[in-house]
Length: 462
Image (cartoon, rainbow, N blue to C red; front, top):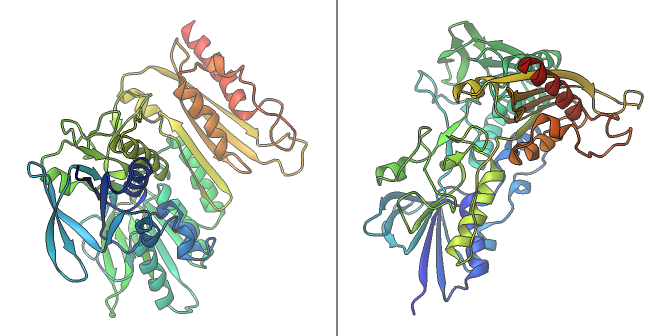
C-alpha cells in the first residue's frame, strides 16, 4: 500500500508537535509528512521573545527547540519560506508559494493539519507601517525590533512607546526599560492587564509607576507621526501626544484563519477554527487544527474562547499527532491560566473575572486578601494580593487572580487544578499544601483567600 500523506500548515509549536508525534507512531513508509512554514524558523518559543529583546536571553537560537534540519532528520519533509496560499478542501490539496523562488505548486493530502497561529492586532491607523513601529509575534519580528534599536545608536535619551497593556505590552515595557529607554505604555482600558479585574489591574499600574514606567490609561491611539527621516517620532492619542524613537505593539493577537475561512471551514465567535475534542475540525473527518488559530472550550464558563499560549499549542499538537498516527488523544478544554511579570512584579490569573461571570449569567461573591509569599518573620518575605471569585450558594470556585512578588505567580497553579476538578472554596481550605517558612506562611495565601471566600459565600446565603 502507498503511504498516506499528512500535510501540515505551520511550522511552530502545534504544527511540528503534531508532525513529530505522528512520526513517532508511524514510520515514513506508512505516513509521508510534508510541512510548510512561511518564516525562517521552526519550533521556537514566541513567549521568550520579550526576554531575548531585554537581554535576559542571550541569543535568538536559545529560543529554538528544534531546527528545520532536525525535523528533516526525522523524515519530515519541512519546506521553509513556503506559504500555503490556497486550500482546496473538496480536492484534498493545498497551493504553496515558495517565497524565495516565486514558484507556486499544488500538493495533495490524505490528512491535513492547520496550525497557522495568530497574528498581532495592527490597527489600520495612519503611520502604523512607519519604520520604527514593531509587532513581536515571531522571531523575525524580534530580530527586526533589535535591528531597529541598534539603528538608533547611542542617543543620550531614547524613548519607547508601548501600545497596549496586556501580557505582551507589560513584558515589552520591561524589555525596553532594561535596554535603557524611557518607557510610556498607552492603554485603552481602565487599568493595565485587562485579563484581571480593574481592582487587581490597579496594583499592576502602581507597581509599573514605581518602576519608572509611565502608564496612561484610557488612551486610544489615533495615528503615528513621523519625522523628516520618515521614522516614527510621536504617537498621537485622544488623550495627548507622546514622543517615541520606537513603538512596540502589544495590543494582542487574533487567530490567523483567513486561509481556512476562505475554504469554508467553520470558525467561532472569536474567528478561531472550531474543533471537537480530538482537535478535528468540526464537520471534516480528515482535517485537524491546533494552536493559536483555534478556539477552545472554557471549562468554567462553558463557552469557547481564543487563548494564544504555547502550552495549549504543544498539547494540541500532541493530541493531533496521536490521532493522525493511529493512536488516540483528546483536549478537553482550559480554565484560562496565565502568568506574566514586569521586572520583579508577578501577575497571575485563572478562571473567570467578575465580568466573565456576569456574561455567562453566574451569580458570585469575591474576597481579596493580603499576605506574603513566605512566613512573615522569614527574611525576604514580600507582599502578595490574592483575589478569589466563587459561585453564590454553591461555593464553586470560579476564578483567582494574584499580584505579588517572590514566587506569587506559580501559586495560581493550585487554583487551576481546583478549577479543573470543580472544587468548592470550602473543599480548597482542606488542601494539604507544602509548608516551610522559606516557602509559605502556615496558611498559604491561596488557602487564606479560600477561607475568606467561604465566609463570603455563607454570608451571601444568609
